Image 1: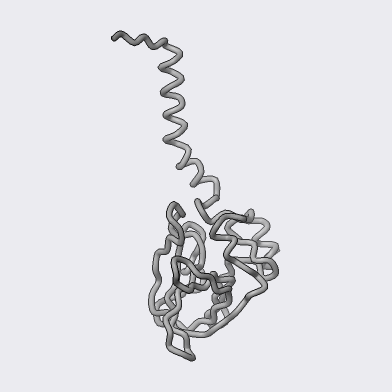
Image 2: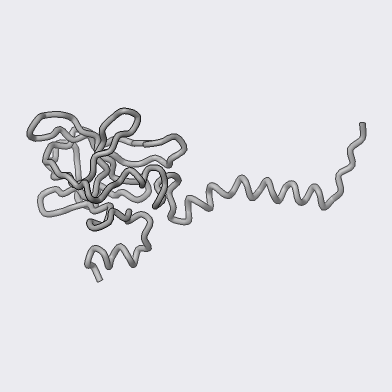
Length: 163
């Protein structure tokens, strides 16, 4: 069986292949994080009317992938000061969260503010902010839970009162 492919067909094939192979890389550079988007399955777990807080000690910093296909994120394991339970706290996508900004380390005492959610049968906290002494990491707006990683750098500065 002879199959004839025109020159334009070959060019079209390789152009399509190149677009498919480079799409994930260009998506990653766009500032978006797969699965962490506003309105997505993960974001829908955040109910701003259910804010809660607790104090505790950071016992570990972990990589999290809340749902299959999501970009990796940063989480904390925090031992609750009151009941000594170890709680998993989701901070946000790995490329966004900067723990060094407040010098957060294992052993630090923190106050966690966020909402409880259930993922794969486990209770986790979707953080709004984590405070260490006078410094804090804010990862969502306090009023409606809009994630900072979905905002422009200029909008984040405005929200944090840095402009």
